Image (cartoon, rainbow, N blue to C red; front, side):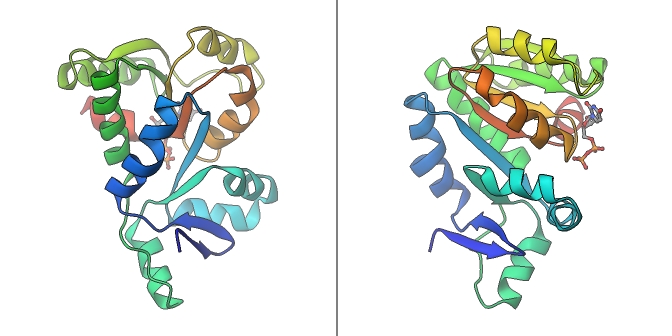
Length: 195
Ligand code: UDP
């Protein structure tokens, strides 16, 4: 089975390689809009107390088991998930793929200096990757102008680092403005990338 439900959240049961090669890369090449949630135990716990957030996570095209606690829980219910898939690793794989295929990436979120540095580090690691644009994550939640600006750049990949649940809510509310794109909440990944 490709999906295993833990507390009503349908996690993919794939290795990182299978997930990328069988799902994300083909969808990117087909310009198919994709919403990926990388769910750690904190995110799963939040879905238990926030019904709206739960529906959003359940509506994602893929929910990735991003934490040893998720894999442990799957073993406990005797439906073991193959492996933990870290959001940060997926982000780097996607950047590498984007560089190879000439796809463009937008970096939304984190503090201004962290956002700027994260983009610089991404370009250092993947010199030919196209940067569609970038914007820090400290704007009013109801402000749709940022979303419109991001959509105008027509990115293939949109990394959203607003922390959960805000990043998933932002993706759900704004995906409709885009013609294409892979959208993924990346939590503190820009902080990690920027060092
Ligand atoms: N963040 C943001 N806007 C906000 C709140 C958080 O851009 O309104 C950024 C924050 O600077 C950090 C990232 O979201 O880069 C992840 O934040 P946090 O570590 O709190 O969230 P988690 O990793 O638990 O999702």
